Amino acid sequence: MNDDLRSLLDLLALERIEEDIFRGQSRASLVPRVFGGQVAAQALVAAGRTVPADRPPHSLHAYFLRPGDPGAPIVYTVDRIRDGRSFTTRRVVAVQHGQPIFHLSASFQADEEGLEHQEPMPPAPDPLELPTAAEMLPRYADRFTDPGVVDRLLESRAAIDLRYVDEPPFGTVGEAREPRSQVWFRTRGKLDGDTVIPRPLLDICLVTYVSDMTLLDSILLAHGRGGWAVGDVVGASLDHAMWFHRPLRADDWLLYDQESPTAQGGRGLGKGRIFTADGALAVSVIQEGVIRVPR
Image (tube, rainbow, N blue to C red; front, top):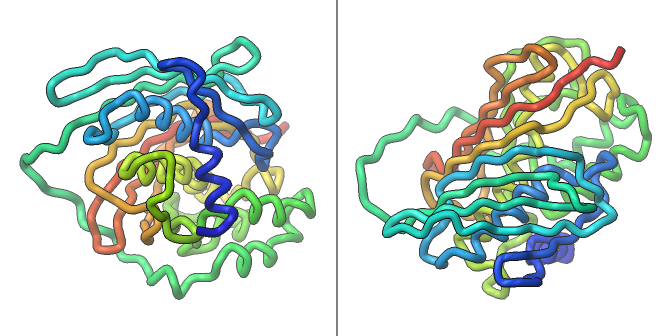
């Protein structure tokens, strides 16, 4: 396991300061606030550490309430809403500087047999045939308002091998495209058994972390916008929902198929499906975000 992946795992390994109270650290983000995927993943870790290991999460619903301060710790308080025979429910509030910045509800379920069907996996190229971030991002350095963006993007994704199937929004600025995008991703290195967070909770929390990285891209594509780094939009996540359908491993390739059905009123909706490399639909994701054009 490389140092970058170990650093991400350390970020998710919260300190327990009371029975149902945890403290997490932050690190510098691409923008002057805590990365939404980080706080969502940490909140899910906090909830999961109060639930038996044989009950992984099957869904989460969350709201981003205030921008997080990356220079201050985040305190996560867990409410044990319900412990049933099959399902367990938890509510988590993340607090900084005495104010809630994030709210999450998560449900966990014991393994159970039942009816089964799924949508087929869409076609996508082999991820190993696609350029890595280090190969792709420098091509677009002249499109960013800040020349340091490339380095910060690479640093923020150092633990995750994320590869775009088609050009990212900042690659086709001014060209409106179909509001669909795909990325392949996996951790940059295998997850060994020496982790504080048990599996499969660890895999699910890592996928939650990544799920916030590119989900709103398809909104930008529909309007030929490049994103915050280009300076032609400003935005932030408002709410986030995920459903975990089937087992997955965050250190194996996963296809994130994303689309946007609508944008209006300064908001846009992104929908995503995450498939394992062998075609199993593992996760469904929906997020709404603020998307505004600067005046």
